[in-house]
Length: 292
Ligand code: G1P
Image (cartoon, rainbow, N blue to C red; front, side, top):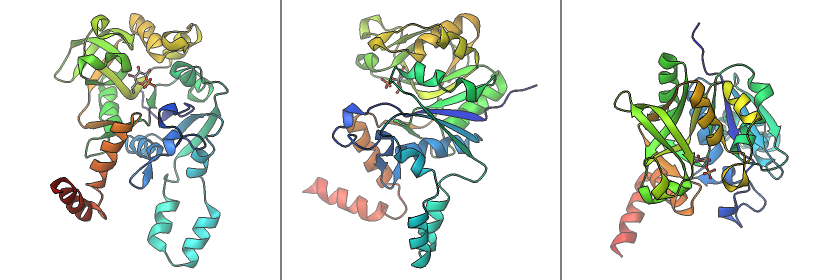
């Protein structure tokens, strides 16, 4: 029987040091792009891909994330009293009613691989997705994960979202070597976490979208610390591909690296230019700004 992807993991325990002091007391995943926090874009992408169990791997000082996906009695009552029905609907429909949110606390920030392994008991023996909210992907349609789920339906194996990057930037990513299957799909033969440009097997970088089979948990259980002294998901995938096919998929769409200040600003400007309420005025403002 064909397997389906029902559950997604959102590792959100990171400290967000690149955005201090903004992230001193609030999670980096709650930074807004225009009017929605980054984590909401990722959750909406998962919902669009048919996922109905969202597993958040959280940490201390991340309470704003469960609060965001919870009922907000005070605000809702206030909006209802003032007759602001449209805004009320927005606040009430952040996740559809059929979606379940599960929160797991990762006591120590031991790395992405460790974060994923914290979800083992909730995921069980089924394939699942991992979304890193830092990587905001806009494909103008239902989202990158929907594209990947469609490929999973045919191939029934692990699949990583990849993108060609500037070869000078390999030290910021997991990098793969893949043998081409079709235009955008390849079979991964090697994966390395953050190699120096001269040691990188290619310029094909893993961005924050993964579909993984549960075999990854066995690999993660036995892993020792890797790059940066952390338990790396990349190292577990390197072991997984010795046993099972792991595919690399060059998705359609634009990725914004919202883990960096510049990427975050670019995302804000470009999403602002697409926002139905703002686009005209914002565009005129930007034009004027450039002329001056
Ligand atoms: C993580 C992964 C890396 C991947 C990247 C995508 O790194 O470890 O393999 O390429 O996400 O954004 P981080 O950005 O958390 O350092």
